[in-house]
Image (cartoon, one colour):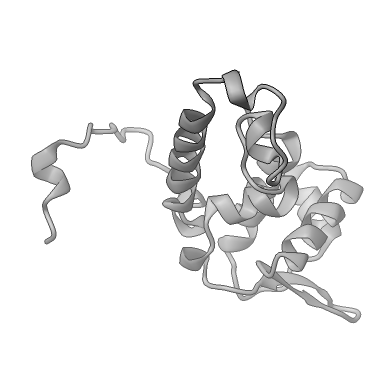
Length: 153
């Protein structure tokens, strides 16, 4: 099963919460209360988002965090990578240039890169603005057809 880490899931939740009021300064304590996550977890994730340049840290009595970019300019891939590092579906993709001991006999290794790139591309294609907008209950996902994909209106 392919699954996001708990931290990545929480990071998307926290960033979505902030995206609803992007100009407001959000304190870790109030974010923890609103999302029902532990304060240390929220603090750690918000700090990671700030290190990645996705949040701006505001110091002082009324300090906290606010978005450093517009929600449409932040991708789900950036959020996940900020807490989990680069997306790598298999160990050989996270080896950072170090050869896997099975690379010479593994016919699937080059294809895992294709799959990994497709997943990363899909996550890059979804903005924080999109993922933080609730989908109506009566929304029905329509499959993309070739004719619809060419509609530029």
